[in-house]
Length: 248
Ligand code: ARG
Image (cartoon, rainbow, N blue to C red; front, side, top):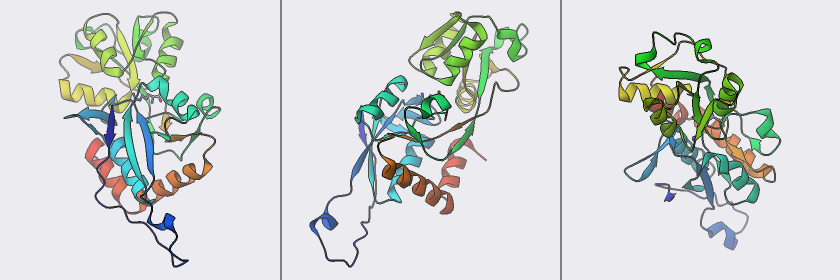
């Protein structure tokens, strides 16, 4: 799935150093990869990409005079796609980890995150705290920190899915006892769906920070992304988007 991000206006800085042909060239379009089943960070709404990350990356690159095209990809394919150069940027609620840092570069952190555990509301008597689901059958998304953590908790008793919503459905269908996934995503799901079906156990498993990923071969782009992130924090756009998608 490919989407052209709607950019209203892109201004090119034309310096006084003679007007070379490149000064008139169209702005470069960067290919962004994201796994768009991760509301409120990224999801598809009315056939278009929506969510905090999607609006944020457009805003960040706009401050750098660049446009983006948003591509919906499997989460575990994002790092290989960066390495192969088929995408320039991965914007996908991706947690900054030491393991991933060996393969790709991360921007400055842009969101404080953490993992939580969700169970069926009907089981809230049986599972009261996170420790209670250890060793039980757990569901998580392939290639995520939630999957790694679930495996630490339950070893082989983990079922992996292409995206969070599929894992939530499996929990609902009693194919597992709990889901391990990112807190804002689980909270958004429970808020939308109603807490009579699902509940989030108190506390969280860890603290994580998300970053924007680029190829190690592209330090210039990494600088652009970091400069753009700083710019949107300064001009109020980051705060506006944060409020819009996370409230407060
Ligand atoms: N934060 C977790 C990780 O980096 C999950 C990210 C999943 N993102 C997505 N768009 N599905 O492993």
